[in-house]
Length: 233
Image 1 (tube, rainbow, N blue to C red):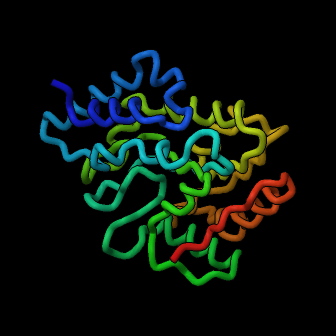
Image 2 (cartoon, rainbow, N blue to C red; image 1 turned 90 degrees about the vertical axis):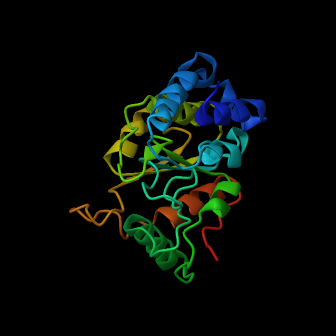
């Protein structure tokens, strides 16, 4: 009997899945192997986040042929109710997570928009911003618990596919893990904006003032691509 993560994977594969299911990760058994590890943890009593129907939201909401920007995160928020399958995006009822506050404060400063009251980044995803975490699952109260489960192969292949198949994409790489993926990107045809992580634990504080949102939009506009409306309600 299939577990909940395997069911979510099957649903993802049965959907049109916007070109992503052609990745080797979904064809060579890697996805099933990762799903089995996640379901093993669920069977052992772990509270795995986000809920299985949300695990592949980043790929479902942003088909490959719509990608115009990429933002990579690490793993989902480890508090139930917060994560819903998009990097940095937050649906919890408390104060916005610190890194997300920094991101949205930078966006507001750049665009002149008010600081958003919401942390739900779904509007970005629907405009072609791929919000992909290095690991698509985590366990409640245990950040990083699934970073070595094999999800990273999916991230590498997704970044490579965007680089190979899309004509012009702005990659916003924040922090060391994301910046390592720069080697997978053809910088001759894509924009690669690297900076420090927006986390307040980043002692270099080298994210604020880097203006990634307006720089990405200016470049997309030069390429004849509709810029992203980064403002949120």
